[in-house]
Image (cartoon, rainbow, N blue to C red):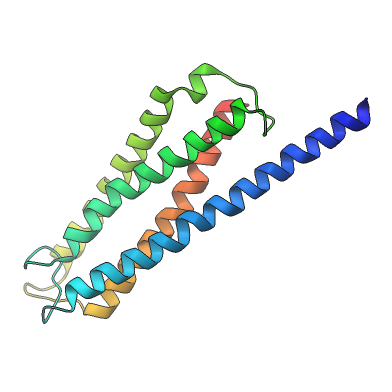
Length: 169
């Protein structure tokens, strides 16, 4: 009987590792590629990229991305953890407070709000630090948007897992 319990625990740990590996790549690769390619082709139609001014500015891509990407990643990961938890594929106790949708929406909303607040503050700081009319390069702006999306993918993936583990134990 104890061999069966030990095997079951090893299976649950293996399931957890597969879940982390698969979902991290599932979020990292498409977010990085799409958030590099889309701004690049949008910026390519103009001569320069400004932070807040112009038809296609950097804030137009970074601010919505800074709100929705953390929200959606946190929401997706916590919903998937909830499904794994209820199917007993991972070894955490089920607690309705932790895995309920109000918990999931609260964590996702807070992650999105905190992220957009920080990014907006940093963008305002940059805006007032550079001389008026300063423009950013097209390629570096698109690459920075893609790298920021990749950073969001990794950061909010692990923050959602860490928050779940802290509240579950």
